[in-house]
Image 1 (tube, helix red, strand yellow):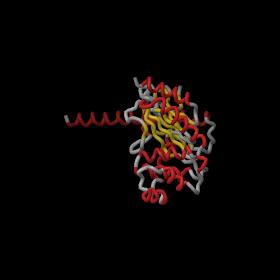
Image 2 (image 1 turned 45 degrees about the vertical axis):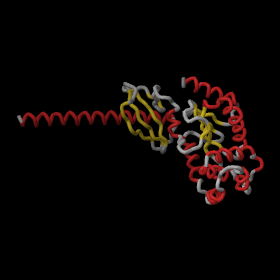
Image 3 (image 1 turned 90 degrees about the vertical axis):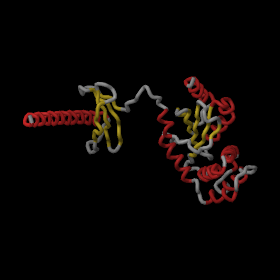
Image 4 (image 1 turned 45 degrees about the horizontal axis):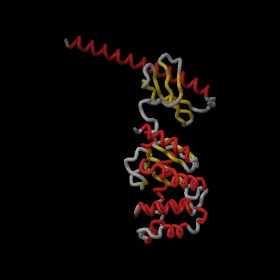
Length: 282
């Protein structure tokens, strides 16, 4: 019995190895076919490296999927089992909300918000206090969107100071320093900077912040220590990195339940997206 068992195990091992070899050969064939085609399709220079990675059965039945790396840039693809057809791009699950992944990249923990926490629509803005288009968008958001929708939406502001605006970063640091003490101070200084944008310059940001925080319960000694030592600069940079991760490359940029609206858009453009999101939430 031991002898027959040993023979059977040896035979089984050969089958496993043969299957592995067939799979490896198949993978090599797919990789060559995809790289040859994509090199031609994308007009990739002969000197550039093109490599298929992570080849595996696709979520789409009757196909395989993987990633093709071209000079360090990754492109997803799926290929039919017969090797005749391929699609280059990300495989998406149609049962999943496409904007859910966007919102998952945006951290709102400990950030002050306007509106109820259980609002059906969440609006996240990335902006620059010195940007004139951001000032225009601020007016639209503050005097129209938030007044029109009231407790149906919750609004958050994120920092995205552009490097060619010299007082935008200090202003962002100041607002975050105020926010460390209380949310009301955050929003008061946020409103002040946008409302008085034309009167602010790199030399008077701190003085203007003091002016904007009058009447609040902010401990100004603590605020000055925070501002002078840029203690919130890491938070500002984290906001910027987060914005870039979801596609922000200019200001202002808004995400309404993950749906991006870029630039100082008219009220009607915000309204159409918000109304659609509210209808979907019913």
